[in-house]
Length: 448
Image (cartoon, rainbow, N blue to C red; front, side):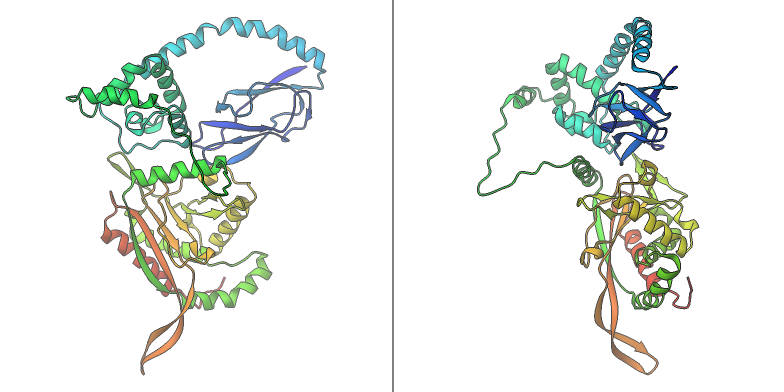
């Protein structure tokens, strides 16, 4: 007889917690090893968690909707065919020991976190990245961004973790007037009277929303809320600038038409334009490595690896961005395999958190929806993103040895949005022009 504790698994290098979406098994159910027991959502992806051992699900320790730290216990599995009665007696016998050992620990921890929460930063941490979970808690507790920037963070690179903001909320609720006065006085300490008005503002009742006509109210799903938070945060943090270049991709279109049926028959996969475009982006990044950076406060982090994120539209209408790790180490065939694999797993909800982390530059194919160009929003903390427009036939002037001629060519727009804090117009414009150059000079004699 043995009781095995099942813990929240680590689902990626940057994942520190997960939200329990749904239990797929009930207490008393028999489960096999590696059989899915529950669904968990992180700030990157939803995934199923398998059982670490086979047996009987003896106890569920967390409820649906709970946010659980990585490594924390979530369930107890009774192994070796243990019956329910013996499992109950064992759990009951062991419970008092654990209960007597832990009462003082939460109290000490609470006191420590309250002390941390009472300490405020001397200067606002402007430009700091906040996870969607932290932003959601801040919004629900009525904490404005101005106040959020003064909360000390114990996470990586000084980021505010869930523990930090919850401790702050507890301390804030115990002394709301003092907290409000501090926040209001921080930016302009010489002004005293407006702080009283600001304290009274939250007490005003929010007017009820009114809708006229025949409407349908649709609540955002969890992923849409996450996307909304990230997009708003990106626009708030990064001053966006977009440059446009039109590229003649006739050679690419003709080459793909020549090889797509052969490749489909040989590999059983589609030969799309996306990996060809990504190959050109990788070459341009090698020429302009300062595009392959991220921003951390006043520091610019230049990445040696080139990890290309590719936006994938889901059947639900939401968007997800898996990453091709070390794309600069792959040939065209390797990029084709990676693009198809990530796109297929994205549409079937089989991506892992690692698939969605570590991106250094992102490509979005808006042309797949018939759009000729767009102004994409940067994926933080990256500094640039490229939108690929639809390929259209156009009349064009063709220069020949015998003179200029009018011909039909295939053109597409490249829309390059970049963070003007660290990428100036010269670099942003030269980079997208270089991508177009690589596309226009595509080698039509290469095989695949």
